Every structure is written in C-alpha cells, then in structure tokens.
Length: 408
Ligand code: ASP
Ligand code: MG
Image (cartoon, rainbow, N blue to C red; front, top):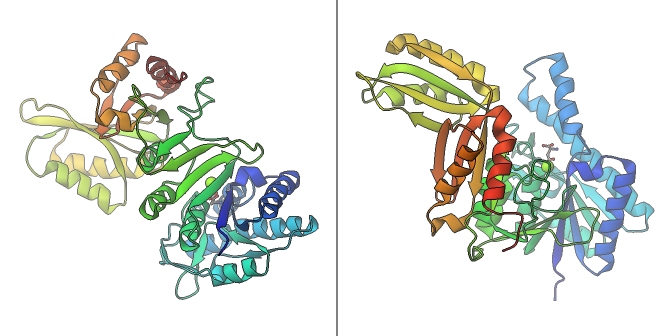
C-alpha cells in the first residue's frame, strides 16, 4: 500500500533566521522519521517579499509586472535551497524544486496568477527515492514558461493545490501563531484558540482581515475537501482544524471576530435618485478595477440621495478622482472621503439558525458609545464600519458580550 503523503507548509515568519530554519528542518526530519512521505512548501524567509517590492519601488513606482514576478520568485527559491541544505546537514535526504520544476502551470495574470495544471511527477520520484521534497510556494509558470506568482500569501495556495494533486487528506500549516483565535490575541488578550472552524467561516475571516490563511487556499481546500490544520511551528500541540461541516456548538452564535483597518469610505452627495445612477457610478469604478466592499444608500430627500461605500485604502485616490468627475457629470453636490475608518465583523455558522446576533452586537457597541457608520451582512457574517481609532475597543466589547473567551 502506498504511504500517505504529508504536506507541510511553513510560513515566512518561521523561516526568518538560520536558527529558525534549523528548527524547522528538525521538525520536518522528525515527521519523516515517523515514516511519512513528506512534501514541504515554503514561503520566502521573513519579510523578504516586502523588501524585494520596496527595492523595485525605490527604482520606479510602477515596476514592470513580468519582472516583478521574476524578482519575487527569488525569495521562495532561497528558502527551499536553504532548507534542503539544512535537512542534508541533519542527515535527512532532501531535494528542492521551484514551482516550474514540479509542473505548476498557471495563466498569465502576473502577480495574481491562477493555477491551471498541477504536475507532481518529480515529487513522486523524489519521495520514491526516500527524499523529502521541498517546493517553492507562491510561484508557477505559464505554458510559455514565463514565471508567475499567485498573489500575496500565495504559498498557502501552492500547499493546498499540491495536497490535492498528491491526494493527501490534510495540509498542515506551520506558523508563528498556534491556530485561529476567536479574535486577534494582540487586541483581545483572552481570545480563545478554536479547535475547529468551517471552510465558510474561515473564508469570511480570511477575507475580513484575519491574516491566517490566503483566502484562495481556503476556497481550493473547500472545493477539494482537504482538511487544513493551522498550528505552531515550534510547539507540538494541535492547532485549529478547518473542515467542511462544523456543527455550531450549542448556544454558540458567533465563532470569531475580525477587524481590518485597510478600508476607506467615500460618499457621493445629493445624486439624483433615479434608475441607472448607481449603475453608472459602480460601472466606472469596476472599469478601473476598483473593488467595492460595503455600500449604503440613504433614503431619498427631494429627489436626491447620498451613496456611500468603502474601497481599499490603496484605491482611495483613484476612486476619488473618478467620483469627482462623475459628481459634476451627475450634478451631485460633492464627494467626501474618509480614511479613518475600520471594519469589525462577527462570523459564525451559528447565526444562520438563530436571531438576535445583530441586536447583541449593536448594543455592545452602543454601551461603549461607538457609532456605527455602515452595516453589511451575509448569511454567516455581520460587519460594521466604525471610526478607525475605535476599532479595537469595538472588538473587545463584542468579544466580551458574546462571551467568546469561555467554552460554555
Ligand atoms: N512570499 C509571498 C508573500 O509574502 C508568498 C507567501 O508567503 O505566501 O506574499
Ligand atoms: Mg503567508
């Protein structure tokens, strides 16, 4: 019978120094000695990807996209070679591979490529020879052999895609945090580590600002039914499992709280309240590739209305320019921009079958005198926009109200 293959992914923070790398190598060796076939996926060490981006931007603010992928792919390549060196020094046979070498084929969308085909033959050969296979995360190549990258955090996606291709049931993520928490422990010191969370909850958390896993890796895992395990790179304890159906624990309405401070709010004032106006505004923004998050339209007064929405802070200037132009075209009164906002969200499959979550959340905010500027909801999530300097207060207030530190 074939041995089961274990995919172990290590994040950049766990590889930041030679000493940390040696520790990771020991962990990999230990798994190998338990008799497993081990495939390792690595991120670039420490903050290397950010540093490489900075270097290029110090030359020109708009570096060429193809060459950026050439540049960024070097970070992961350093990790894998160093890790193979570390493993061999321990007496564990290992071989490193770039994404292209193992046959990770992508489309040609530089800096955010999608995987279209996954090889694996080289990995099987290496495993067959008793080696640990170490694969560079985040990178692939097009059919034309152009190097691409999969988007920030993309090594997570490499790991899950490999787990699927190699038919392994679990993909282990080793990190400098030991799991997924009910809230960011830096903001809520008594946040609780979750044992289990569903793909859908994790997807909401990942896209709402919990920087635990790349959301595309969670989507991929959900589609292919691969269990994800987020755990500490230095401690042996189990972390958080991310799986299909998770029965919400009795009485648990909310699983976790996330927050993000990377959005900004725009308001276009006194636009005509007529069919086609919103379409015009949001088509113009879509054409400029600007993603919109929360949208609110006021009730109409004397035939006009205000439309507010949020965008990523990095898109604010471009979005404002477009709105200013539209404002004069549509005869609107003006455009307001506010960078000092943040988003706080509660997530939980439990709220599908229970009412009162919003009431509880909003009253926790009211008691602290925190004003809600915008609200948006989905089946398993409620988000509010509040002033940026109140975000952490809001997270703590809501965490306390839902009693998330305690297990019953
Ligand atoms: N090194 C890349 C990044 O920092 C990919 C990854 O770490 O997942 O985004
Ligand atoms: Mg990462």
